[in-house]
Length: 180
Image 1 (tube, rainbow, N blue to C red):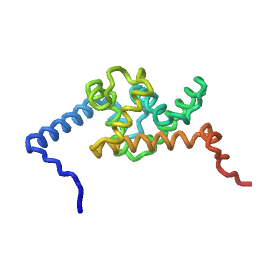
Image 2 (cartoon, helix red, strand yellow):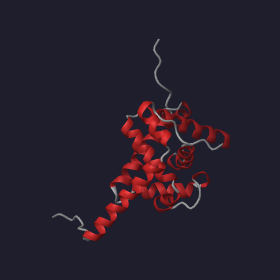
Image 3 (cartoon, helix red, strand yellow):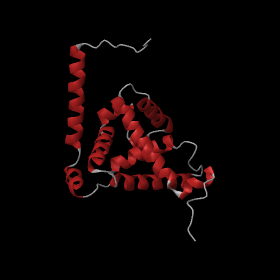
Image 4 (cartoon, rainbow, N blue to C red):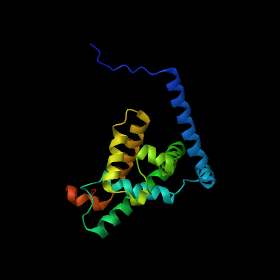
């Protein structure tokens, strides 16, 4: 017996949602700096200040309990993770970098930031609870695009963190083997 839930969506609602989504994506594309578009064609772009602020807010939520507790070590670990994520993003195919750039542009745009993330202020002032709540909503969303955004951010964060030697001692990993 199939227990899938059928959602009755009117044609008007479906069209409205499609047009609204297209407008959001067009706005994000329009707001992205032209320099980033030119750079994407020739060389991998570096992270914008807004992207760094977003990552500084989200990384502690992703790595809650794994980061060092001492403030200076914690900040250094977050900075290392952001730098490793920048390297990873720069190594991705251009289309993937462009999609991530669009995601970060959307998250940095205040009206979209409020609607999607539920954040009223800048990312750099986001609390751990606000970032965690945003990530939970993203992860559990009924929209596959939001879940895909969560997965991308999660995978990038985890890869960047666990590639860092700072993360190895607490999990008992001695590091990569050395050849003699």
